[in-house]
Image (cartoon, rainbow, N blue to C red; front, top):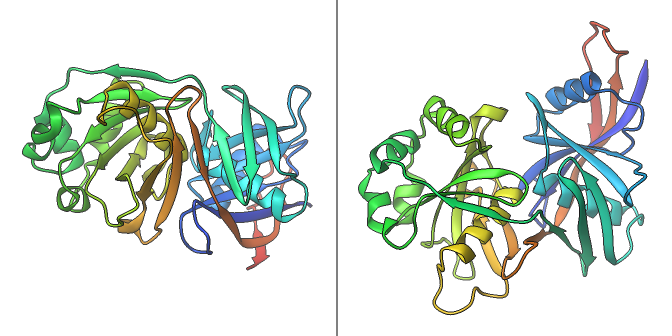
Length: 304
């Protein structure tokens, strides 16, 4: 039976078992969609990246959740390029990456991987606070209190998210999400998930604290979400969330309430928005890949 190298790389973190774990298959050439879906289910990370050569860019990535393919994933992109740097296969500078949303730029500089995302699209929506609050599992007042200055909206820099500002961290940390209701909202507004945030943070250097829920793609709560951070950066620019200009660089903290703390750096003053961070390999091993249509179970082995 064929085997491929498979890894778990923790993105937006500087030590293992923090941030957001991304699966990575660094030699995915020749794998078909069914095999990639099966590998992603076996690795069971929120997203697994499959790396292969590209005729249009320096490399090609496809991304699968345990339930299916998505077009773009920030933390898996950061994880892949950080691993390439660990392997001395990535020099400092700008590189091109083919994805399902087009060719994007990825920068590697002083240990940080920066992913330039797609052109931003921010649309304010007319939705009842009671309904959004019920889906998120918070008091409607925690949304209405801040809604006059920060409206509900959808935002995308490659993947769409429903952006929900919350007044205080206590409300966000105590959220009790109704995943069925969130999935219904995501379908209605044609987005991947719901990203709730507050400017009330755990750490003084952070700009905001976020939580992201995407049950429709098999991720009830994502620890740290690069694509959502980029979308929210564009949202903050669009709604004029800061007096004067947007900060040159923001830091979004996420994952603390699922014991996977991490930080995403965001540059959103102009398009394309860029998100950046570090990553570290937590598991490196091999995975057995049955032939397409084979009923055998995929088995993984590895070491930290």
